[in-house]
Image (cartoon, rainbow, N blue to C red):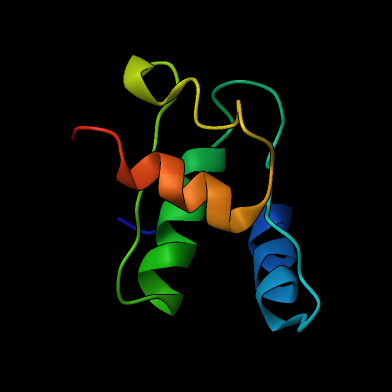
Length: 82
């Protein structure tokens, strides 16, 4: 089944093409297709992805406690049990 084309699809591609891109935070109303758009984008442009759902995976709720530096966040994620 093909997904509906959304504005976020173009935004994600522009974000990826920006050499000075920062980590991406996607916010918006519930149930409008954000997650599905991001999954489709990731599948198309990346070999591997990690999806963390902070609602369903409570063990990840504190990964930002040490700040927002990418290396620190990745370290904190890697220390968690799957």
